[in-house]
Length: 551
Image (cartoon, rainbow, N blue to C red; front, side, top):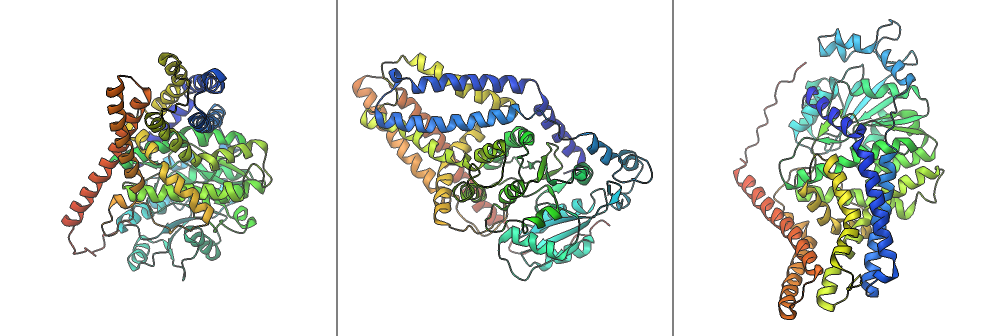
């Protein structure tokens, strides 16, 4: 991934972030949410007790999450780059020469020279370590990341932190001219790997790049100047993905797009932007003050962020795309990633709820509450999916059946249609695959909740790690069961409608849900067939020849 493509992506996200259309659409969504909420709570609209309670519980949670998101987005038109940042950036590579960093970079033709430029903050030399945690990723993927990290502008040391204990990775480090750290044990996964590297290095700042994230040469140039603020603990940049080749990778990519283009930017206003594990730069002394990266959870990133904010440190998020990586491209990889993220969020919500624990501002408490409670949306989705079957099998309705259909449709759409419009704009179109994947993910989030309750640990696995054939259906059994149940319910509903000669919106809703899970099931079948084909076509002979690395 070249620097020009990275900058193009950054410009697109920046335009969406600063567009005047965003606050208009968000304001409309807020008004729509109030209208819909007023409809839900009016006694004359209530239906049967059980489905009404289910619908009210699910919708209120969704509306609360929506309000918090809208509040964050509307607060996001805030530029974290102040005068001191620009002053520091101008002198980043030439504090004693009087030239701006841009002029120096423009005058350099050789990457080797640019990556050797001493960096300064407050007119003092700074030292930077770049950590690339590796655990079994494909060697070519690691190679691309390592070379890009090595060639970033500004004097720094690049380290491969190899928890996979691979001789091929060690050879790669030697040929690339970067440092290599292999720890004797593998406890505490990625956080343990980074903490071990911190015990072996001395840089004042350290960056973390996952093995599949290729950094822009300007990564340090854009991030290090923020550390003119002595209270700043870390600078986070977006996770941006360039693999959109199938249902999973396309859907997962755009699921994250709104978060990185709007939500994280809004969190800057409240000093609540959190680390996402990669594409981030930390102040070593800040991490040392909390005893290292939090290593009691696989979601070390958000735990570490929370502890730093409780300690009184600042954080910064910038929407500039400075590294490009790979989103999950199989249902196995996606399920494991979402399960890990959701379990970590539940752990914080249940054991260290930010509304009540720690020394946070009121705004930070609400922001962390929104983040750590988000995955409860899985339960809301389940409740809403059960409403049509209750109507079809037991004639139980959440709303008064005497209400005209058009009235319900208008009130319902006042909230949900405006959300779709917002998603349409921020994602550059109505990404059906994203909506399908988000809906079908609810069993993952429910499973994660019970994992957190039981304290069940999750084995770490690199995104898109390749192994022997593993059927996608091993990871989406619940979605298949849901599809079968909805299909049978739709058949019963159709027979019932024909027999009674009556129309029910619940039947239409159930058929729509059936189509969603039918597509998801088809995607799993198609992926399994493709994986089997790839396995049959792959030669058992492994090419161990090492490519020559550029100096």
